[in-house]
Length: 124
Image 1 (cartoon, rainbow, N blue to C red):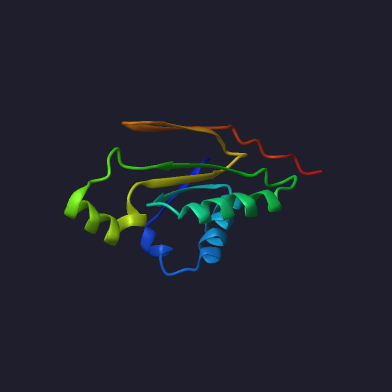
Image 2: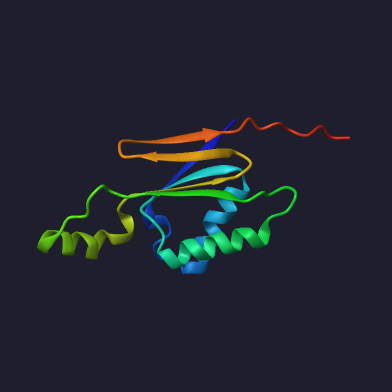
């Protein structure tokens, strides 16, 4: 079974960068796919990938990450205020554990999230 957890940006906006990364990484380590409203800052994405690499072990194989942004950002006066007030909330970020997510394909009109079959190990 695949669990998808939607997370509004308001749930992480008051956290520090480290807090955001820890929260998202912990959800992925629980074998859940996160659909985050908006996106992380570029530095936070890099830190998330670095933190993931440091925590890879036999049970946690890493994450798959994709950011989907609106086709065009509005320019001019309206675009300035939209980006000022909603900048990190535009678009969507998909984060999932590599053991569950096979690949994430982005197309202009859709997201294809291909998952792997999860097999439970037999206890001895």
